[in-house]
Length: 275
Image 1 (cartoon, rainbow, N blue to C red):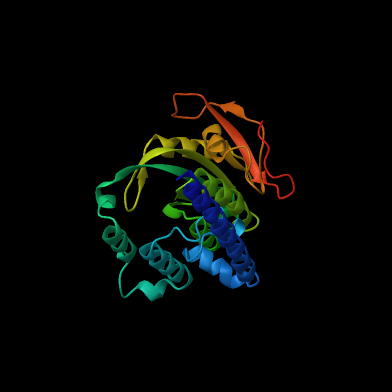
Image 2 (image 1 turned 90 degrees about the vertical axis):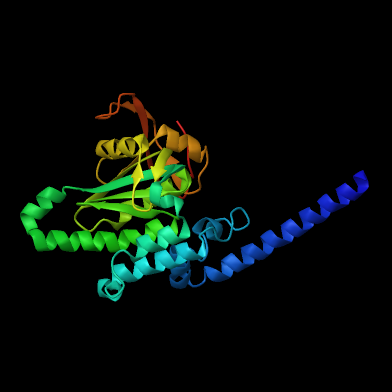
């Protein structure tokens, strides 16, 4: 019996090794066309995590309805008039159809990210409303693909800021760092993130995690992503292409407990280092 079990395990290891090798070759092939593979990842046809580390992550985690939702969001960003005939509630209806529990809300572990633009009030005063609206439109057009490609969603648009949710701390960190680069010049984007349980509905995320993430963002400087140590600890010691800075204590407005926050940045050479 033990011999049969060992043979089965050996066979599974061989098959697993072959599958990882095949996935690696497929990922290499897809990466030869960056534009098309970027769209595929944004829509959820393939996962960016799998493209970056084939064999270590599922090829795809988005459901068919989520792929359709992301596609419609992309169409709406590029051509708002294209969705006029079916109304602005279309995406919400799709969400309800996919998961009726989302109407009343479910409690899930989520990572929440807030962003805003440093100096936006001054920019508006100096350049006028038309320029300000153009900058916001540019930001949202650039941010959407980044958020979707990491499996997240734009929960709310709040003036010059965005409220985002992600299924994992890792995807939130990667998106937050990448979003620093999409700010319309001469403005600089800042981001803050926290992770924890929240009530998630079809159009909102509610809970203490949301308040903490918003207050962490207030602590960040323009061009900086700041996360709580809870986020860092969920990600772990190593996240390729990411470096965590030194943790510090922060007193956040409206948050009774003292929170430790950590700056995070892209670092393709060193990977990540914990303090």
